[in-house]
Length: 437
Image (cartoon, rainbow, N blue to C red; front, side):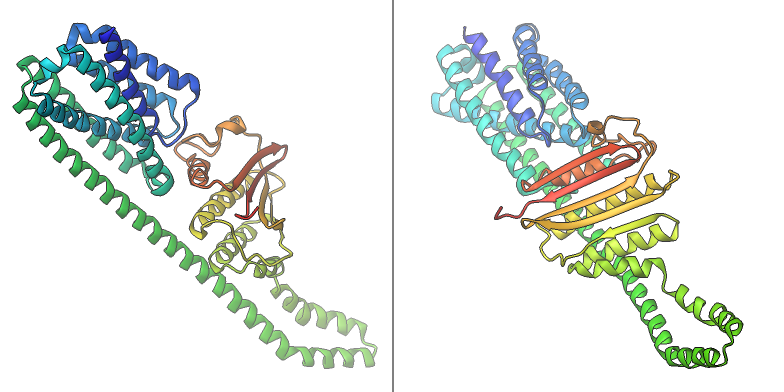
């Protein structure tokens, strides 16, 4: 009975630091498989191989997480961080228990009542603290929003994997030598220092990555604003020229009419008036609706995207009839989402015969509705799979856009995102609910 409780609580600890720290919630079946695997390996192999059986549990769960999650390297890094956390505090708890009861680890394990009490208390500690850490990681720090570089995530994963491997080797080898109070104390100090260094490095990476993301966004905003300003200057120049020529054009036209020179009027219209009318391009007419957006960063982003679409021959429709003041979302996040949606719409529309993109934004009961619709070829994946990492109809290693949108929206509780396809239109609808609604 003691052995069953010991292995059961050990499996629960593995389950807690694995599931609670993952960026995405797993289905019940996947969570049950992870727990069942951890318990089975603990129960059947611990008696035979001792602490060395941890290698079997650790490697197995690593593979399960890799196949169960959409962002494998981020999920694995969170899992490994949780493992380091629980092992470090396990040693500290054992050191404290040994100090209080004046026992080494071997004596603690053979004392059934103390072993059960220790296992249960530590299991509760792991379940509570890992839940709080997971909430802090993904709700407060929003690490899924900033840690999106695959190369960086792979480097973090390799570093944590080697550190965990060293941890397991250390206490497995220590079991063969025999645990004593001095060894436990030394290991606890070493592991605590290594864990503290790991936390510091991870936080430093997070801060640097967050700064780089903010810098890239500012540069993109400046570029969009430059394009938008340039467009306004061009339109202003055309208006000045038209205003200067307006009276002369009317006087000249009246002269042709007085002389009843219709052929001359037609020739004058073709040579002088028509070129001026062409100067007021389709983009000038359509982009005027964007003046209703009061956020300069969003307005300049949309302007640059639609100008480019018109230039490459995509038919655009912009429906924006009321002032847009409150975005109900952080400007940086909304810019990233709109950029991804519009890039996807443009790339999909250009491959079709119709080449159409429609954009609509409006308020409904203070909730902001954004709809982007484009012509597209039938998707080769189910709509529900398009948010998965590297799943895309655009080619290899290009399918992280909607996955990133999904990661951003997970940090908000006031959003509704609908994706549909009804041939030939692919539609993205994002509803940003007002906080008071």
